[in-house]
Image (cartoon, rainbow, N blue to C red):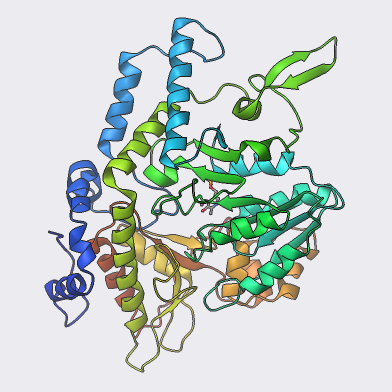
Length: 489
Ligand SMILES: Cc1ncc(COP(=O)(O)O)c(C=O)c1O
């Protein structure tokens, strides 16, 4: 059974809240195996008293992942895989085994897809951006809610004079108008190189865009990046059903350990189209100094610069097996039960004067969304309370949430209705201002939000604790307190 140690919101017994919740969401108790898993493998969370609600920032690892990986390292000798000596061969074998398992996990055919190990999802996106054959006839189409690591591709496109288009979502649900998208997709010259990128799940709003967009775009002459970094930790990605050209992801977001590893799942036909801007140790088949030429290695090897992280890559298979054994669908079910409850509960909170305590950005229910909820807490006059004040209150209660704009400026600009002219003004002087100076320029008390994100072993007590902290702001105009200056959004 889930135990709740904290005091419930005034006048309501915590047992009755939990009883109501499980009555309404019977799937929660059906996922009791996750409570057992938490007790067995994630005991450090409760031992240290943490309510961890930043799974979109980073996932958490099970103890056995670390122990199993440690066992491999302590009982074997691995050498640099760029040789064929015994220790090198062993490392190569482990790297290739992990690579095969990544394909298996995502149900991707090895004939169709290559797995390129990278440092993280950003590294995977940079590989595509720097190598994509943009030219003056090409297009880059981006949705507003892309992560900055996708937005950055526009600089490669711009340098090669490709046309750049951003498609805005509309507030309040932060979803795209599909007809608008289709009309833009139609506009491409299919004989040119056209790249369309969107997040399978927005790391800002939790919105899940339709994966049907992949085929729709490909049929109209686009190559497609489906950014799955925020999607795959709690959703099944079946690459025998969906066939995006490029899928960037970070493994630590899925299962917490190790950090520093991600991959680009790339269709082999799409890879043939790319032109790497350089070569390096590891990525060449042959290179000559006197001959001043090189041949790139085939498939993934041509994209893995230098020595791969051969000691940590075996931990990727361990992590994926852990997710498989736990059941990605079970995790998804539980996350959605808790997300449903949290959305309903936060929306129901009212100050005594009847004004809402919480403003949630993006979808207000669980339809086509994941367990990521951006929000602000409001005072009784309906004004946003600076998210740094809330962050401090959360920190005092050992609640880990994310604040700011989550490296997703486009979604934030729409959610907070920030005007283009003012945003352009931020960059007009060519001089970087401080965070508070930007706020003054935009005429805002705060340009950030709070983000609560649920994952593998989130339980009712975690989300309850967040609600409880939120309730401490009922009927309050918090005094201004010294706030730490922000260093980035
Ligand atoms: C949707 C999305 N894409 C890309 C990234 C970048 O991931 P990383 O920082 O691991 O490179 C993130 C990180 O939060 C993300 O949520």
